[in-house]
Amino acid sequence: MSCKFNPADVQGNILRGYRKPRVRYLMLEISDRAAARRWLTAATSGTGGVPQIATESGQRWATKPDTCFNIGLTFEGLRALGTPAASLATFPTEFVQGMNKRAIKLGDAGPSAPENWEQPFNEPARVHLIASIYADDVAQLDRVQHDAVGGQQAFKLLRVRDGWCFDGDYVHFNYQDNISQPRFAEIHDRDSFSDSQPMAPLGTALLGYPTNFEGLKWRIPEPEPLGYNGSFNAFRVLEQDVVGFEEYLTAAATELLEHPKVNELLPPGAEANIQVKEGQRLPRHDALREVIAAAMCGRWRNGVPLALSPDTPNPSPDVSRTKFDYTNFDDDGAARCPYGAHIRRCNPRGGQIVQRVANHSRRLVRRGMPYGPAYVHDPAKPRDPNEPKRGLLGNFIGANLGAQFEAMSCDWLNLGLQDPRITGSNDPLLGANEPETSWFDLPLKSGAPIRLRGLPRFVTTKGGAYTFLPSMAAIRYLGSLTG
Image 1 (tube, rainbow, N blue to C red):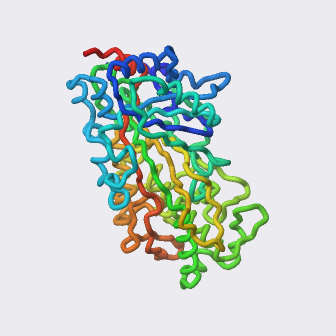
Image 2 (cartoon, rainbow, N blue to C red):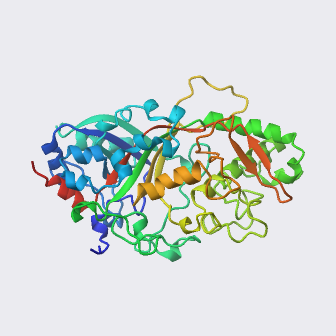
Image 3 (tube, rainbow, N blue to C red):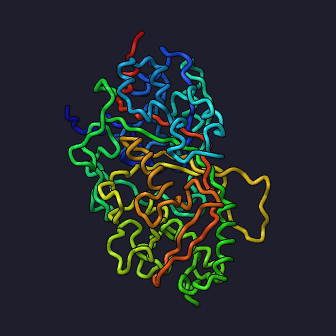
């Protein structure tokens, strides 16, 4: 069966983001199956006081609404609703097993292991539905939460998690984020986005459409109304050691000052080109900190890609944040953007990799917001033992968890299989690093790179779940189940 794209059938926030400054996630357990089915039916139309689920077609607003409401169901949630066993058997293995049982493949070991996850993800069988509320302020979040779960018997509220945007799309570690996302020809105007990457086929994010692999569509859960226009999401609670990251930059820069090749990495006087604030000239040590931070990410902290501006975060004239590739360098490529840099590992664009057919096949839609207060680095201030928790509430959306999210996490982030020059190393920012074995290469134009060692783990998984993001037709189907 071919499926004609109908944006009114697709939940919002998948193909296009909401651009709202606040989000709240409600982790819910189904306590009354019949009531939960009625709730789902009501949510498709916004009747009975239940918030209406936002759709892709609804995102073409003349005036944006104050709030947007969406849902994702875990495998246990589908089962708790009474989804027939024959239908459950058609869902992919990784979704059926759940994120906690796929932990090793994701690098969730040691402090990130599921036995250390926070409530309620330490009891994954109880997490049935994750509802998201996007809004402009807290009062709106409170109102929609009350309408969704207050005074009803369908669900038990297990936990609430809030995230919010910082000014300028910056996130913890002080990088500008939300720069490059897949664009879809059915949704986006190519001429409106300056990006050298090809438009993504709908099958990147939705079930029932062509993918980047010629002639391949992912298997669609049955029956047809349940699977078509659905998507899968890896919801992650990622705690970030922001203080530890800044401390590492300081220690690495101090070590580099004594390195015999430091002048090749940062020629004397070149620190004048590295300004994080207008008119502020950094001392050489602080400039080296920013060079290391840029190399680890693949972008300067203001979002300027190293591929287009390897020597300064403030190029003149300005350069595109998105229109670049790794195939048109004058040298071997690494002297501009390291092979092991975070954005290059996650998305090699058109650059040469071992798995050449996979270049654009593992792209994901990313929706995330920080939690915890923004951190202002002060080298004169000692580490506070009561430092507040900070991190990211992240959603990594695609049509196939195994071929996209898990393959990227395992093969590219934590094994470096895409290039023999980084194989055996982990992503410097998100990877499952241990100081005893970790390393990252700072490339030089003249020859062998400078190898940094002793990278700790900066990001620790505190919980998460694989969810199915059903279409509106699927939500109505689930609401109509009987027995």
